[in-house]
Image (cartoon, rainbow, N blue to C red):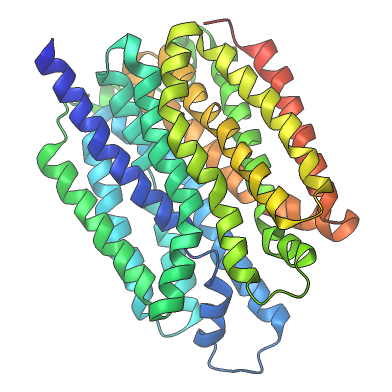
Length: 400
């Protein structure tokens, strides 16, 4: 039993590092992408609208393609093994993101951002590999630890990208991230262990057959919808954070730095608590922790609409990270418990599509609502999304 524990725990720690780097790879460009695109257009007089348009395209294309292709990688993982897909994703992203440091125009950047979406699947297949190798009474804690890496990377990425670009220019962050992903590739290649027997293509299940393999399809569908709403809610704030901070600090010259800190605050608390709350879910019931996290998120987003200074906002964003720590890890634990092992890759792939769809829809929703009704309304609408999520979880999942 000691050997078995060492085996899955080693996998967990290595893949948590990889998830952290993958999260950074997807999010680090947030503070400087529009500035990088401006330099690639080789024209200081380029209209702001054109820069914003290309920034939107470069940002969204990664998540859009990831949402489309994630189920395909999940399907291949169920047939060939999860480690193979993790290796493909880490090596592919290492090359693609590294190449973003040498592009000469915006068209090359957009193509590479699209390729980054094609090489998705690291995070979902890391979750699947751990969910199928960890002891059943440790799944919540293990997935919580993995999610710590993902969420920390997603939320600390913008801060790291802003600092690196400030120190060494816009190209260096891409190169450093590529090298880190290459490190994650070799760590997985040499140290991650998976005992998997390939499944012949002739024995592969169709979508309809996958559906009939599920003992509780309503729960799986409910958790995918919950994932979409969680990510939509979290990401709806991203387009307005720096503008909201500027509104709260109209005469400050450090808006960019403070915005980076505010953006990073949820990642700090989430990294500290995700594993602990996952273990708590194993002990008292995963659904209870998930519901508690959604209730807390609903309550904590409302006062963010009425803050009067940036320190209040910073504190409330730190509390948002506590709710985040109780959300996605619990969803993934429920998926792991309700999915047969032979189709778990496909299920996690579907869930990853819903996650990326939320990453895509959230900023669009936040931008539209802030333009129409003001910044405060975005936080209130986010609270409403979290409340709707409570209803979905209550109606679609069972107490466990």
